[in-house]
Length: 103
Image (cartoon, rainbow, N blue to C red):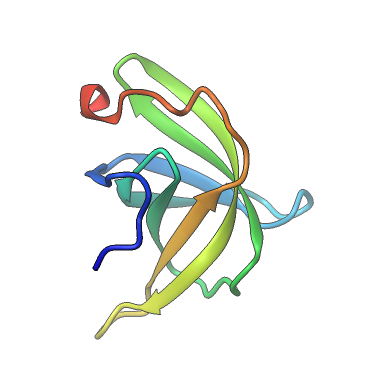
């Protein structure tokens, strides 16, 4: 049974993330997104409950949407040095775009 409250959509866009204000932004590629959160693949481990600041790059129309989120799950990607990270959005923002139309 799927516990998600919002449907997920494939979403392959650039996302910059930051774990603290003084830490430089790092880049990632998203895998899927919903109105409640996003999954990204990164090269470093991030602990559960870490607050992250995201800059989600959208293409239709072109814009960058800042979002604050919290790490809710982390999985090591087999045979790589990468992690898939589930991030739940903490703020209601205008990111609540029509995801299907942004593809």
